[in-house]
Image 1 (cartoon, rainbow, N blue to C red):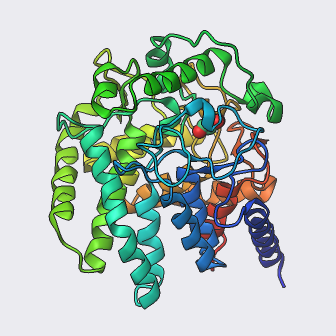
Image 2 (tube, rainbow, N blue to C red; image 1 turned 90 degrees about the vertical axis):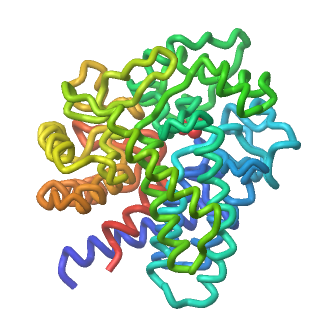
Length: 432
Ligand code: DGY
């Protein structure tokens, strides 16, 4: 066996071992201790990894995630399947009322809805398997309800651009895109003890002032009785996040493809077609010529969050950039990629807020490398696509499966033996 094959096999084995270690019987924790529950977009990405060696378990991951779906269609960001005291804030702090939640206790926000994109990929791997088609057919009403929830509750004025209410909802918690918007949120006044900094060095995590505001928003949702309209009207943090808008858009198109593959057409699919068209028109409002990029908008001040992040690059994954915009983003990306040997730093490295090791302020995240690479492939930006693939392979060969990676040095950061990093490697970089 030559060296390359040996390295690949060893990487595969250790990635599989990570998913098995993090398996809690139907759902996978992102990593032990730091994140002891099921997270929404982690679960979707993790299912892609399971599918490379255990399809039954991949589908189970999705079954477990959908158990948490709220009555209004929302799929929450964390499902607290079992109690654990290694994480804060827990289910009691979120205090979601039984009247609104699904089968499992959860948080009261969602997360980037990549789930339908994952389901499409799984279905396309075995398009003629009757049992799997049946399973996906049973998901469809739930997935449609989830997507229509985004458009209904998060865009009640039909602007074409959904809003989100919490940095945790973006999945990119302490991105500099939120700095100004979050500074306008009051801090909580009660004392609490963070658990994340007991697992990970605080230089790699969000700062205390950010946590104080994350928690204010958690309390705020409780005070509004989780009522969609009251939250829309009064929430002090409201952004049109290019990351969420892009992932939702791609997933909505993928969901329609799944519906077509299964011969499903109804008033809900028709509505989805309309929502997709609305976003395609509205997205031009978020293009900034001076930044050569789309930008996230702070709805509270009606102004751009003036920093390019990997969230803004996800317009390529969504197919939302026109040809001219894609060329401009590609030129920007050349500059961006020159700064790191490991793929796409989460903040544009020339921006003054860039910090190569601090969570979403600079580090490279492997599942984001994958989404951007997919977008580059779709736009036939072949050389850049290959560059991101090669950098990602180099990264896992060098340090393995960390939560994220210092964009300057490639060093592993955050949680070790991390499920979505192992899973996306199995699916994207290591599968034959
Ligand atoms: C955390 O606790 O750091 C998570 O990112 C919240 O989703």
